[in-house]
Length: 110
Length: 121
Image 1 (cartoon, one colour):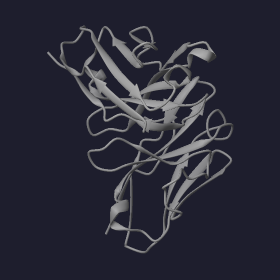
Image 2 (cartoon, one colour; image 1 turned 135 degrees about the vertical axis):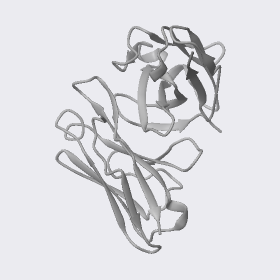
Image 3 (tube, helix red, strand yellow; image 1 turned 180 degrees about the horizontal axis):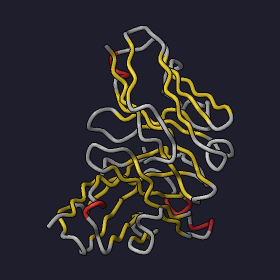
């Protein structure tokens, strides 16, 4: 059971916009930044969004992040086949004094 | 170019020990906050623990499931991060990733390729 809650799966067709939610609590998402990671099959995770809504250089602006209260979201617009991957949210948890991850969302591009 | 290369994974019996290494290059290792993150087969990511940079005291923090069994250390002369794992359990079976990060946050900007640890009799 992960501290941060994500839907196990999401899907969309090429060109569509999809969103992935991440639900937490006052000790993690409400009081700290949220981060998003993309993990392509058989590879290490890659930082996709940092500090709620910032993109590292090289990440397309099709990817965007937002946060409100104890929840956060990752949006992917103009969906492409290469976006098919697992996506994870993460945040520091003040009560646990450690990093917590969501259980991951498997995105399928139909 | 930042590179993190893990090694030391393998098959170990329950109750046994194993030490993982992570060779770092391309950045100032002594100041970097480093973490270990693991992923059980077919499962999600789990933070294992971290060590602060030398200039920030070099102290460590661990996730509850590994506290008291795992120890993170670093050797600045070799630019290498270590994870000493003792009293291993079957549930410790996972790919272990070495990562760079910053502060009290879920920020991990560089990742190694991972090394697989299998705990089985």
